[in-house]
Figure (cartoon, rainbow, N blue to C red):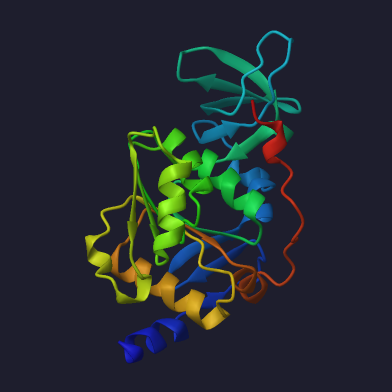
Length: 244
């Protein structure tokens, strides 16, 4: 196993573009660079509109849609109910269909939990703590499993998230668990805390190798600093207080 992890680590490659890393052959994007990358916006691409409720006609709060056409500084977005509206580009979050998204802050991590899932997705969060991100995942995905190694945190999460039928929790240690049992399309990983980079990297490599999720979201300051040294580390542009 150690030899496998070492060989995979040797395969990591950072390209000149600071917005993108190839981590063990998987396209890896940093949060701020990804949401501000205009090349991620194109007709036919899925997106998420972050727009607070307002009195103006056509406002849509945190709604998923599809980009239809660019109109000056706005995008025409088609929503699931068939309606279309012109939305300022600053309010559009691109959706990564496949790959790895890395972020350094809790706000960015929770925003990705709201915006990056499909309604049919099976999602897993490792390091769920009290379940705050799991709540947001449950609003977007078909099923969600929250995992934490601390039983007291799992107990708090269950109490904190009661009433969400598509969300369940279990106690497990990532490094002493059969990862092949995780039947997930999307995995969120938040074991940052006191974990050093090598531990986070080992977890990412194991999840990519054994689970092969379509999308892996990693919250880790160490990971971002290592792979995206020029990345910003302040709060995201689309903050949680703009929610409905």
